[in-house]
Image (tube, rainbow over all chains, first blue to last red; front, side, top):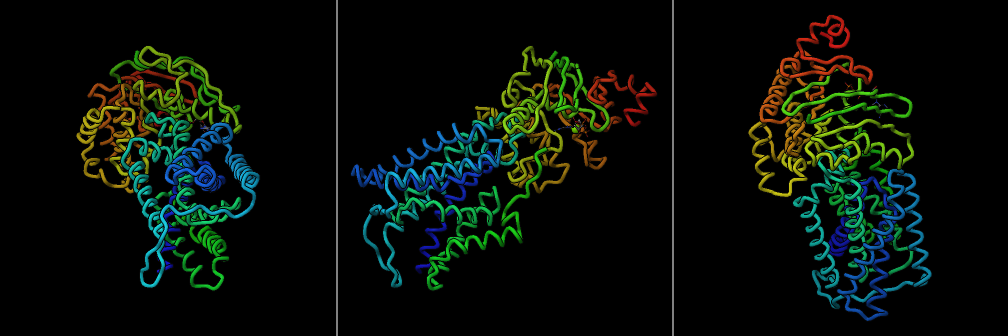
Length: 287
Length: 249
Ligand SMILES: Nc1ncnc2c1ncn2[C@@H]1O[C@H](COP(=O)(O)OP(=O)(O)OP(=O)(O)O)[C@@H](O)[C@H]1O
Ligand SMILES: [Mg+2]
């Protein structure tokens, strides 16, 4: 039971992180290493807003997401966009960005572990296992956001343009889609989702300036397993890894220390055996 | 004149792809651009639809070489050579690219709707979609299918249908017959004729000279980035040297 609950929650969060990471990669070939750093910033925002300023937690979450989105767009405009066509430069720039966030958090909040109080306290018991209301809430909200994201991508014109540009941005231009503008919009959506994930996760975890690293690795493993650029793949792979992680943590003594290495092992195995991932597309040269 | 290209030159680094090319297309015409492999036919279409300039911008940003682009392109009385690709479509100059390039992961219907991206009025898109389905009944039948799983012929119909969805005044089609069986080629050309009869001007790049000359009004022969001959199919075929050397007939 514990495994199922943890697996579902971790899986759904990983799905959000991995899908939002894939989105901006798909549209603009940006590998955003700072993706989970944005998620950390959102978590700390909530910590400050609800703790220091005593704001209502829901308002805190919303403000945190907005703050992170604005930060993301600024970073895109001034840091990433000018070097967008240089994949290696983008990689280095976003690593730098993540480090900047880490050091900034370290300066402001010190390296101490922090916690954010739950939105709703209490728990109920299913088959002898404590299920916290906060866990159920988080899971529910994440599912709703995933559904909204699906709707945006599959049922709206903006979604159609995002998918088209992700698949072939040259041809997308021929249909009147402005790929630079879409990259900007997608960056906004991507970072907002990272911020949102951080916001809903905050009450369930401890905050530290290094909290972006482990999810980054696991998220990368999800993206590789699902197939680079495949949204459906990211979704399925997220739950596979979410459950694997839960299994490892609960079944193996001291398993919690193995989480990262399991993800890395899966990533390496996939790269060796099936580089295109579960649902990946083998990339064709553009011309 | 609907389209007027004057003194177009395109260079990639030192390589000259298009060399001082001028041509024009009048409203309602079906004009073909033929020539051997590597003559610069695709580059011409990419230049007028804004893709060469788009690619130049990317190359500049990634400092991976430069493209030199010069000359004027006038469409419907307006200079379009400084306008970005995604704005050129809006003017009604639409390119159906080489190798079809469908969005392979998307359904046939989504591919067609992507073509109608600029049409704000859903009712109008619906009408155009009905026209496309009328032209290509097979696309209606396959509308929920993933485009990557279509056959080559169907993918070509989809590519043309998708371009048609952008409501072109001038439809440029790049080698629609590549890789198709003779019977399918015939069919694709018939569809192109049909679109032309609907009043849409067509600039067609092709290697399949014998079929194209039967339906085109005028033709340009391109070799090494230069127009070396022009005229009706009959006139071009009568020229012995041209026929043997460039047209492969
Ligand atoms: N990106 C590029 N960089 C450098 N040279 C290029 C590039 N694209 C095309 N070329 C060269 O430019 C020339 C013209 O290419 P283009 O694709 O326009 O020819 P084409 O007439 O369409 O040929 P085909 O019939 O094979 O499609 C070719 O020699 C090609 O090798
Ligand atoms: Mg060509």
